[in-house]
Length: 587
Image (cartoon, rainbow, N blue to C red; front, side, top):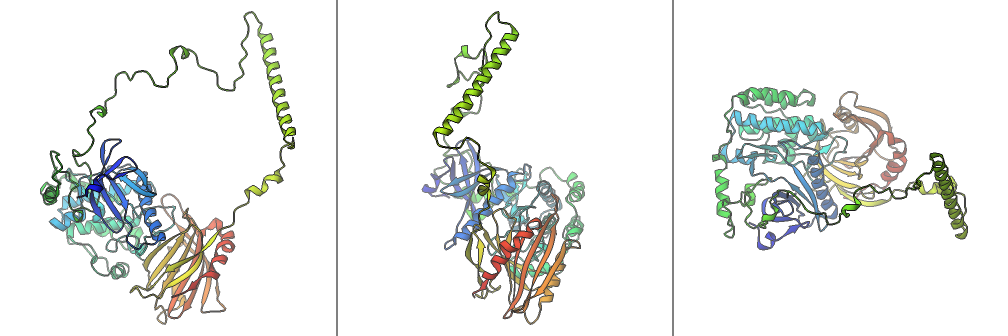
């Protein structure tokens, strides 16, 4: 339960926080009350861990806003609805629909595997939600049981679009995290390849696997990097024989192009749902948690039934919804929502006699014609008035310019050309941490980066390559990126040719073209320029990368600048040639 101080806390002057629904490393989700619209809502607040740096704090804020942008464009019954993004003391708060529910992960943990019909209902709802997201150009990237909400009334919704991105955005990750949850991440995402909507198909298949088997397809409790390695290089787990096994296998195909499309997923699930009972998730599945919430209900609450959001934080890390009567919500019978039959006079309205005829627009020249004047005379008079008005205006302009000692003629084009000159890019010294998996401080570096670029860090496990740490600095619009990839203990078991081959293999035919390569004179390594194409439903995006790959000790370092291909002419001089000389490994 919230403390007394927390109960009186109000965000943005209207959202009164009530109690904590869940809390994790990324933030806290509150049950709250909108005092303006008089409705219960869920409010997600960023949680900044102790000792977090300013850069990491910015990353957490950006992730919160990315979630808001992702769900703002979606309006679907199987997606949590966004109400607002509020600001309080400079921090963003995401206000969303409040759904009394449990996550699918909680239901499986407490009650074991789902029935075939229950799993089919989950699969159909999540497939429908993903279909709406993909049609809007959004890839969820983290489909898993913990992000699927199931309500007692049968509603099923997909939530947490925190690492979702539009297909036109550059890849972004949370600091120290991979693009998704290791046990449910798609193989191509885990290996650092381009993220496409097909990654969500794998996530859906892995979620259904967990639903029918009672456990994730891969070990979620072990070393996350070891789990990623199994996802990339291991065999795909097979579900037990059953009606949904072929569907799960078709979704969890290693190659993205081989995965079953969402439309076919729903088509295959329809016969199962057609014969399913009307109530799939009975009240017994929600009784235990409800009992816990009743025990935790504050004695000051006098609502007819306990609010569903008063349980301990560990019972619900997701969004919940209508908590019923609000015990301390303001009682305002006058705000019943009904419109008055006659709202009365408008406080700033004009007198009735002024409404008979519209007023002429401001600045309109009106010359009424006297009674008896001919049409020709009226036209001549109006024309003469216009000429006199223009002459007076021009004379006034000339007089003002002369008195002010300013030239009468307009300034020449050369006088203003300097105003459109682009401002030079401002660079700042940044530090990155690309240490090895075990946390040894062997990957610290410094480099000059354009001011305002945001840093993201992730771990990678690529085809035919050992584990690595990738640090990315991304421009504000997501179109330009500096990437630093560190492969510890790469040598002597591998060489630079292996890296180049793996780079080419990471893309399908026609999506990668090596433009040029040259060996470095001062050290073991080479420079490269290559172009890639990212394909998505919203269209293809061509990017150009300038890279330097070199050996330092037993490590391989790859430092690259990626820009849209149409910028490649200026990017090499303005970015790559400016940044690369400043890169220095410091630890």
